Image (cartoon, rainbow, N blue to C red; front, side, top):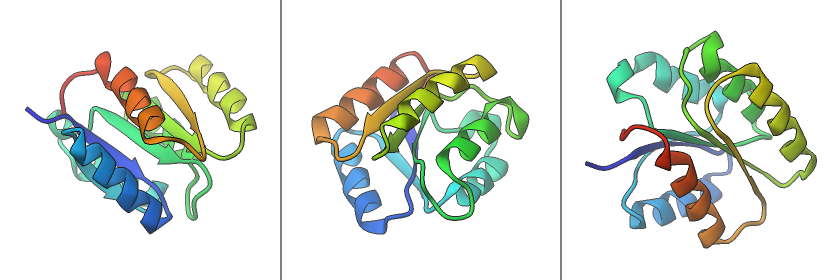
Length: 133
């Protein structure tokens, strides 16, 4: 059974490349262009159909990555899905660490620009402790 990942990235070219890379690794990918679209996907999904991992950019229109992480962790959706935050801003690593104190699943950070190996490694670490999607 394939593991499902929700990829949230506003840059369509970067989203396409990340999707292609992860599909080559055998993952099934759901896509959203911002945090609001991602939350809509969650709202339409049954608990058994939720993704095993969320990869999100931080700086996006409508809802940033931190807003999305907070929303999917306990407040709006009520799940502890692991998250990989992708950002060019190194200070986001520290902010992500603060979210650990708010509860929820594992948080991983990948700094842009990143290699294919770095992203795949973070995804593998994230899904290793989660249920199949």
